[in-house]
Image (cartoon, rainbow, N blue to C red; front, side):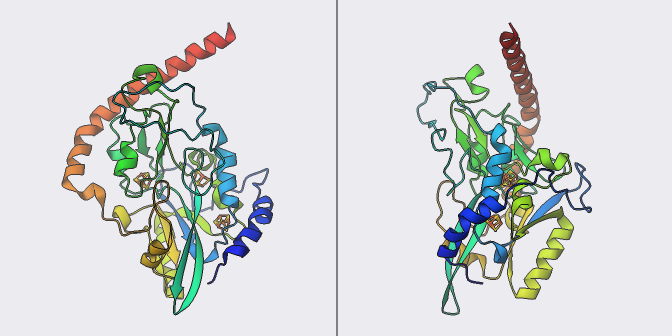
Length: 326
Ligand code: SF4
Ligand code: SF4
Ligand code: SF4
């Protein structure tokens, strides 16, 4: 299916406006049992996406209160190799992942049977089944919930970016000048907080659809129990003689893409780099003996660190509230 860029540009303004979130949000499908232990996955049918970016706008809208508000000036870091990452004056950038943009639309122009075709692909955290970002976070700030969501707790994260380093797609993005490191190690560790899609965990807990799914005028995405989503992805792939990405990558993820063209072609056709993940084959990183051993060592310490971090963050909030009420 051809998706030309001028059509995308034309549609962008109109549909983004048309795709506003409804006042009373749409509910999760009946097969999803709210905030239960059920592992949920999303299906993304690439054929349907017209690149209007209504989903990107909706993600920004519903998550605005979670975005960082950094304090300036930033503390000087030792060693200086821990880079400052400041996106606070580029909040409107939507052509890559940033701490203020957890979803972006990637374009791939590919040649199929001698014809040039362009596809638009929503990209964000894959919500891996065995997420290295969570298993290898030394502070217990990143963790996987029972319903398949991996999220980073901004109250605990120190911004050391281990999660971004071990993520096969380097998804999490750092903002400096915000978070717990300012109170405990302002000059020596961390350098901010890492941000990424949390699959609207709070909306799901309330029985609502993630914003990007609700707002899409083309119904590109679906959410449901993982086994149902995988089954549906295979049925579509069989029907269109298509391809699947995310079922097996990194040992399995909770984001399953279906495409009419092979993912290696799409991967070759997209712009890759910081904040712009690829669609490459990915082996199960947590099956690697080194990572398994590290995770076993980290797990108990990360639990203690997370509890201590939560305690400090709560005490800090209580002090601030007290000061505000005086
Ligand atoms: S996923 Fe839906 S809302 Fe997002 S760009 Fe594609 S068509 Fe638009
Ligand atoms: S895609 Fe990366 S950030 Fe997302 S859950 Fe997997 S490892 Fe973590
Ligand atoms: S699930 Fe929520 S946080 Fe994730 S990309 Fe969609 S709107 Fe953004």
